[in-house]
Image 1 (cartoon, rainbow over the protein chains, first blue to last red):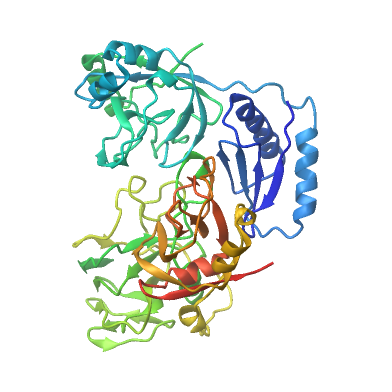
Image 2 (cartoon, chains in turn cyan, orange; image 1 turned 30 degrees about the vertical axis):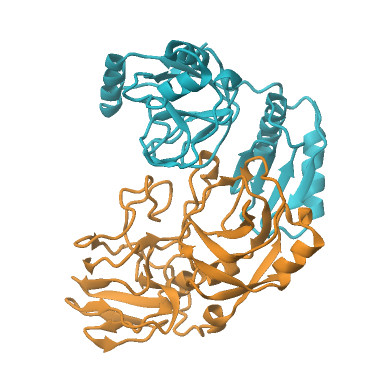
Length: 238
Length: 282
């Protein structure tokens, strides 16, 4: 699928590439493919992915913007270099015990659904990782069932604990660290989304898939122990 | 080694920042006034990437446990060694046991204590810049000890004296280029933005500087997309936020201007009440 892209300068050393302003898996797939091609050819300081954008940050001042864009365009239209890129499918354990899921009851009332039903709807979807932002290791996930979508709180909580699994509008995500936040909390995941002592501090990346697996409080404690002892392995599906 | 007698407020170790980790959501960080920090490292013949101590509001008191060669740059808060006033932007040896402290403000906000060999601090993701959740320390605390590095300074001709441009601190001219959403602004909004005078609000820190004056705004939020230090965001209420070194890597507000890097450094020396004007470069 080829899209109509726009190329803009962003400061002296970055180029912003934008897709039509929609959130879709097709656009994500196209972004990931283009990003892979770009990173194979160019040594960039960083490439920041957005829902419909790539921000290419160069480690020098861009002098010939048009020449750079021409090169990038050629790369975009180059065929057959990269077949469909398959991300990794991760299984992420989540304990939906009310001890953690402090907003489950609220969602249950608002949506007129049992807690079990909410958990089922949250765990049956395979989510797509669009990009990482907000906090180190915070995954922007697409695919939340709209039956459990709920606007974020009007007043954010000052302290959302590390690992909190939450729903904010049509998005769902896991807080990788304690932070303030306005999303509705439905559970907690014992796994770490940002480990700065690892070569890959965040195990997931743009284009990967995430499934949430409901676990008991006992399993939660046991995984926490494994993480502390450094014996826990992030679980892949397929 | 240096002991922290009084930690001040939000003193942090900084270098050029954590470059290349935005794709996992890690802010760049780095000295708010990279320009002044780099002058200190140049004067000491340190590597560009040598870690320095960023001291806002002259708010800390340090004791040198060994002889250390230092250079102070950036804001002038009448620094003294054992009560004796010392010059900024010059290199000298500090005796063992000496105490560095600061007095009243002359200009700027952030002073940089640069030491020969740089500070030897915990390095995470290729940088020693403090950032909560990434480094173990997020700001200086009483009783902390700071180690001075042994990494050899680079060999090159010495910059015994560098003329420091006072304009860096006094100018209210902030040089910018158009941000990706600039053209979505109406002509009136563009005029108000480029001709108006904006005041730094009390909401200013290493993450961002909010400006007091508002623009009329009917722009809708954008789909979350990359931002950079120096990006000027237009919030739904019409307030402008200039993102600074510790900013998040993505955002959803229209990005209407982008500061040149040196302008970000200059803004990092402004305090609440200071006025700034954007100066568009083509």
